[in-house]
Length: 89
Image 1 (cartoon, helix red, strand yellow):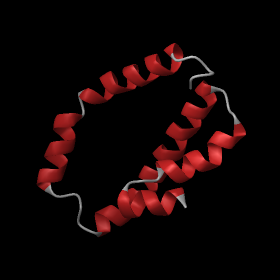
Image 2: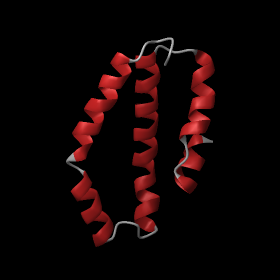
Image 3: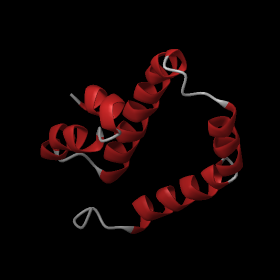
């Protein structure tokens, strides 16, 4: 379900959370599982998006311009996972 909703409307997070949260995983394991799940889902979506013509010049320029923010956002996410207590997480 997370894969389908991720493709249709970019809302794959809630179904994935509904599955993972009851398992009471450690915050690092939960975050890592979500990252890997959506990395695989996004990689799988590349082919259909390409076939749908989503990779035009404007889209690729926007992606390239946002690329420098990726390491900053990744660092912020790692930092937040480490700072927030397991109970609050």
